[in-house]
Amino acid sequence: MKPTEQHREYVMTFDTLAASKRLQAAGISEAHADAYVGLLQEVLTAQERTLASKTDLAVLHREIQLELETFRGEIRTELKAFQGEIRTELKAFQGEIRTELETLRGEVFTEIANVRTEMQGIRADFADRFGRVEGRIGGLEGRIGRVEGQLTVMTRLMWVMATFMIGLFGLAIKQAFFP
Image 1: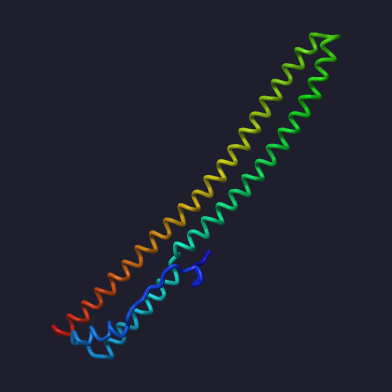
Image 2 (image 1 turned 120 degrees about the vertical axis):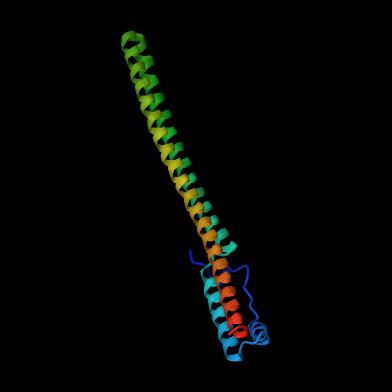
């Protein structure tokens, strides 16, 4: 998601006139002072457009939460349907066992062993599905972490650019006073 002006919680302000007058007061010509201030304004404006605001991150976080809730609802629905199928199969199988118990006790023990095998398969299938759910949740958490990391990097870049600009101002002042 790209930051948009309508989601901004903050606006970076820079008084170009005051900055230009400060540079002029330090002995830099009006043309040079205006050029330095204009360049700094362009850099700050460009930086501001590329930063994600807290609102942008909150919107992204909410979208991920909604996607996660939707996914959880789908999994719950699938699990309920799966449970219903298992219950139906178990009830039918119990009826068969009761009928055969009266006639052949040995076959019942064989069927019980088959049910145990089926249950192990069902458990393995459930564990597999649960593992995939955890994997998707981990992927969403990873996406949130990457977005937070990008915000940190962008903030650091902004500080580096500001430091660079201050250095340029220092050099300009040095050249103006110590030619």
